Image (tube, rainbow, N blue to C red; front, side, top):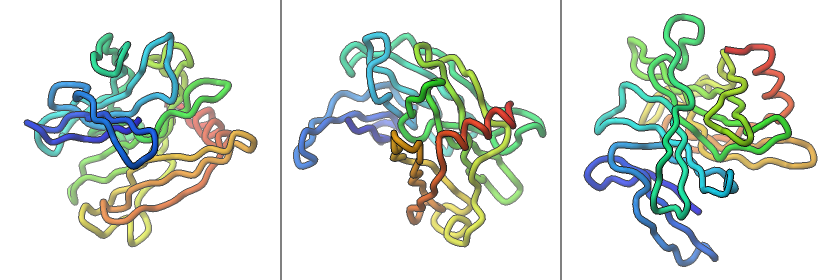
Amino acid sequence: YITWCNGYHGPTIGIAYTFDFQKFYQLENAFLPCNRNGVLFPRKINGLYAMLSRPSDTGHTPFGDIFYSQSPDLDYWGHHRYVMGTVKGDASAWQSTKIGPGPIPIETEEGWLLIYHGVINTCNGFVYRMGSALLDIDQPWKVILRSKDYILAPHELYECIGDVPNVTFPCATLTDADTGRIAIYYGCADTVTGLAFTTVEELMNHMKENPL
């Protein structure tokens, strides 16, 4: 299954599926405009398809929280539940303007490991960083852990200069089940793709040592 941001009458979430990556079948849009950052869970939860998303507006969204939705058939979505939102004040300012889910959640023994993006609005514009959270395995709208500090931020030249400066935007992950090693593919300044490595254990320890 594939999700993306459609542009019909405002941004919304498109869904398609393929068997061979040559022919694709497009389903109905998951939600009304305006919504972005649609992320399907890798398996059904309680017998239902599950998705994280970030309801937004028509422009360069000045706000945004993460929500959880369920569907019996990938066409009709409902039972929308709030998952987590921005953090005001200095405690975790890097995610004070908006947040959104990133790669597909990673199933671990302790819960769903979610890598997400957080944004702060500065005098020089938006800055996008990455954070991590742990969601309940059976009720993913419940947050068990969430990192106060970011795990990756724009520092390299290709992350700071480009079509949209100062962006590290998590897009996809590959996880080695035996070692727990995670490869994170992320957008750099909306211009090139970066690759970073970590492990499930490192992210878990980071959240436990720096909880929000």
